Length: 229
Image (cartoon, rainbow, N blue to C red; front, side):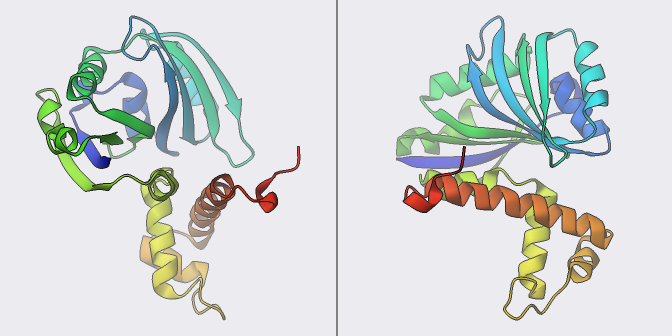
C-alpha cells in the first residue's frame, strides 16, 4: 500500500471562505480537518482543530459565511480550539471529493488548510492509483507532490500535525544544537533563524513538542502510555 502527500494551490475565489479567513488573518497558522461524516454531500459534518487565536474573530467569520449551517467551538489551554461544523461544500470542495472517489484513494487525516493558501493532504491506496493521483485533481488547482512511498501512519501523522512555523522551529532547533546534551543552542538562536522574537520561537517549539509527545504516547501501546483519567 502506497501514499502520496500533495500540496494543492488555488486562487482566493476557489478557497472555502474559512480557509481564506485563515490566509488573511494574523494569528492563524492553519486549520486541520480531523474527521468528517457525509463528506461531499449536500450538508457535511466536520471536526477541525484550528491552530489560531483568539477564537472570536473566527466565530464572527463563521456567522457571516453562507455555507455554514451550524457550528460549535471548544477552546484549548494552548490557545488553539476545536471546531464542530455542519456546512454545505463549495463546488471546488465537492469536485475534490469526487476526484478522490474516482481515483480509488482514501484521504488520511489530517487535511491541513494553511495560512499560505495551500491545502495539504495524504492519499493512500494501491500503487497504480497513487501514481495517477495528480491527474484526478480538478482543473484550476495546481498540484505539488511532496512525497511518495510506502504508507506508515506513525511516521506521517506526527509530522502532518505541525504547522509550517512549528516544523521550521524544530528544524532550526535541531540545527543550532538546542536538543543536544548538553544544550548548545538557545531559543534566541532559534529566533534568529526564524526572524522572530525568542518568546515566539519558544511558543512554536512548545506547541510542536506537545504535539509530537502526544503522538508518541498514542502510538505506544505499553502500560506507560495509559493516561490518567
